[in-house]
Amino acid sequence: MQKHPDSGFYDNGMDLQDPDLYASGQRLEDISVLPAQAYTSEMFQRLENEKVWTRDWVCIGTTAEIAHTGDLMPYTIGQHAIHVQRQTDGGLIGRFNKAQHGGCRSVPAQCQTGKKTKCSYTSCGFSRDRDVIPGGSLEDMSPLAGQYLGTVPERLLPVRVQVRGPFIFANIDPMIDQTIEPPPIAWQADILRREGVWCEYRANWKLAGSAIVASARSSGVEAQWHFPNLLVIHTLNAVAAIILQPTAMDQTLCRISYFAQPELAAFDARMAAMASILDLAATQARDMQSQFTRSSEKVAIEPPRVERGFNRKFVERITRQHISYWNAPLTDARMVC
Image 1 (cartoon, rainbow, N blue to C red):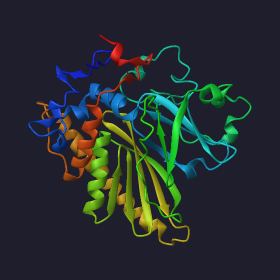
Image 2: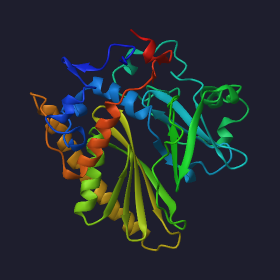
Image 3: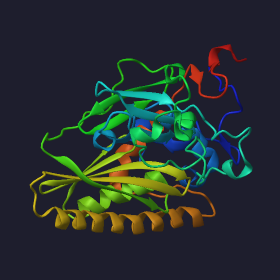
Image 4: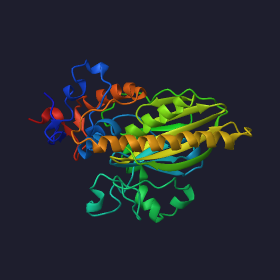
């Protein structure tokens, strides 16, 4: 029997990895409801870091954002600080950052709260990410180069990187099945990234995603959710792509990219329409988060229908057993009594 090398994931006596917690008398494949802890518990956030973010192919950005040689995109997956960089041959390479904890001798108290902090030093596993770093800022052993690349980048732990359409996906699971691939993305070659913006939703990332898809579809707009964190909204000749990144249990950073054909004259109007959908979703997500937070019994609350397929896939991930776990050092669970 496999056993987590630490103490497992429990909240008020509940085993958050127990499939029966989610089945509620149903078959596991019929699950549609998550308990309130899935949106309010810091322990559940740790479970997600272990079972989802450090196991799945995660969308971290777009190829257009690092178009030039040396450009570097920082991204925090769970509590692991990584980056993807454009190479001289045009390819992409992924690595763990040289400074995983911002160069701190130990993790500061303010960085152990489950909320990503704004660090004046660098992006690390406990801080909010900064935007793309131009390649020119990483030359001649600049401070940024030292924080992300070090003196010998070739020695940094590698990260698997793949591209689907205009999107960059990364996977940091050391035991990944090589047959597992990022989700397929149907994309028109002439739809290019025109603009990007970051905004924050005051809600759990799962509620933010559900609200965005529901708001789009209620507006008569096609929306797709590529597990775990890429949402794609299609309108006439324009696309909005939203990358969900948790910054706390009840906060989500939405990295939004707007795409359109270069000659589309009505791009501003299309973008404004999609921004209205996202603003409506932000309000709905905040209200749902408040509903879960106020629930004193911490009971399950029926989610919007759009979320049910996601929930089933999500529960399959968090209840899955693994051979190795991303604590330090990496541990073979079969060797633990």
